[in-house]
Picture 1 (cartoon, rainbow, N blue to C red):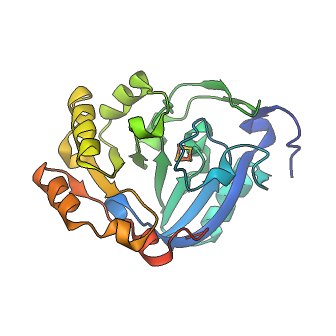
Picture 2 (cartoon, protein in one colour; picture 1 turned 30 degrees about the horizontal axis):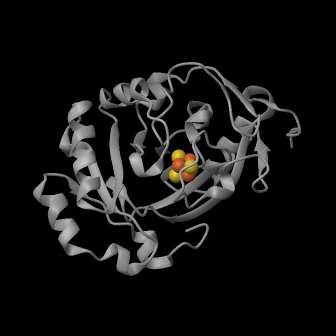
Length: 244
Ligand code: SF4
């Protein structure tokens, strides 16, 4: 295991900060219900108030291992799941292209604030400096990128340049979480601003209880506006249980 006491994390030297690896179903989006291997990374560049993985936020908020690319890539291949989900935290902080192997479909759950094909040099709130080279676009364009732009209720800064990048990519879907009709209005304005195809947009319902997910009037509104509805199957089945 590499040293993680230093403040600078350059993944080619220190490795990927790995929070947990587990099997479950994809709960949301365009692959909902699919049997997947989840690879969750520690560290995030945002602080959304309703985040359900706050334990990934900093190097102090939970235990994690540092894994070299080759080791983690082999761990993933050994688990024999065709679909592999990179999640976090924010997985695009790290060189995901180095983890791709044969006969797998990779998915990335990202907040969309980082352009993966550019080098990154970012200092996080806990003082960790992330330095990584650009990802190989030929590799990551084969991934299914699930970008979740944050609405005003997250009180997080917008990243318009990154969002314009994502809006231009054919290999991305956008996933929003809404609670009210006003949230749907805000999503519509966002989709208009970045000229996103409605066919790329999936909207799920905010909440961590079964009742919060069973709101037919909101689903009617999502459908009427021309968007896909995304179930949140993990909430319906397991609530907020970890590694589900
Ligand atoms: S971007 Fe995702 S992991 Fe990061 S704080 Fe927001 S919800 Fe949590």
